[in-house]
Amino acid sequence: MTDTRTDLSKSQNAYLWLKERIASQEFTPGYRLVLGSIAGELDMSVVPVREAIRQLEAEGLVTFERNVGARVSMVDDTQYRHSMQALSILEGAATALAARQLTTDDIAIARAINGHMIETLDHFDPRAFTTLNREFHAVLFAKTANPRLLELVESEWGRLGNLRDSTFSFVPGRAQESVREHEGILSLIETGASLGDIEAAARRHRSATLDAYLTHEHPGESLGLLTL
Image (cartoon, rainbow, N blue to C red; front, top):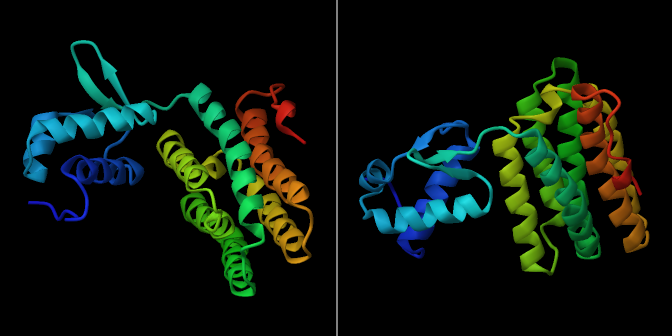
């Protein structure tokens, strides 16, 4: 029997169990999700498992196919672009809304994470860099006062984790630019820049990564519409 949280419903426990395995790539794109097997693993009926899978489907992490059932969603460039577009807007807003709540300790933590990211550049590991990147941004937007916005940001992060193991695997040169932009965002927050400027910088940062990917994968194609 798998450990579960007693403060959550069975469907919520099933949802978290499945999402963790999708995010860790234990359940890779195309992996078939057999309700009976999952229910047996979690020691519950198929009803809460089905509810959990429906929720993951709504997030784009799972798809249903006729005569096949539920599978972990396949990598899709269009979905990736859409998620990055959405995240540039959502994360930019969340970062701006959280900016005035960040303490000097929060800034120090974020800067330390960025320092670790810089250290990895000499022996670049895209997955490790992506993990640190997520930790960096989480510090900046975690204190947003809008819980729904925070939920949406985290949902898109989860979706991206399923669609792309690491964008930086495709465009490693983007990593050096990324850490410089991180410092720029931190400086804006430290100096009390307008929330509009902070949001614009965070949005430009996210869209620049997407543009770098598109230029690499599809030369001549870009998303200039996202550049503010």
